[in-house]
Length: 177
Image (cartoon, rainbow, N blue to C red):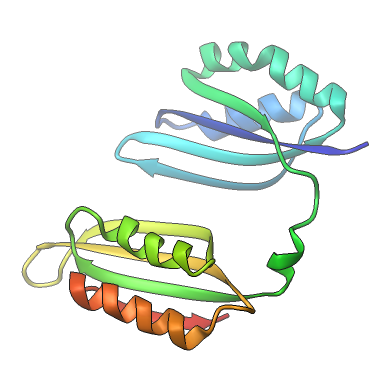
């Protein structure tokens, strides 16, 4: 029976790191199905969904310390939830939320709070701090892919987002996918 596991790891960025981690998975019989990887100010973070049978999971778990020592990373293996999504997610509509603002603490939390209170699930989030054109002032950009339940009125979602974004001087756009 195929099961799925999530391997999370982080360590100093360097050439060959992804090769070492993916080889570790392959040599133990795992199949990399999905992943997100990013260099965050010199630290390389990886989140990988791995498929395999229980023997694969055992080999990965047993040898995890070996990977950490050899690759110079911290790693953790977690069993993934059973295949499929809750029925409520099936009745959700996907949207993309893009925001830009002058950087200051609380931007992500404020938007996430509004979404959470309305039952909107964040499926993915990408954020970046970049210099503004001309001035070089720090601009914070966030792109979220969210699932809006069919029971949540999109007009209410837009109203609540407008309130928080206006309060925090965030430029935003919500579009259906």
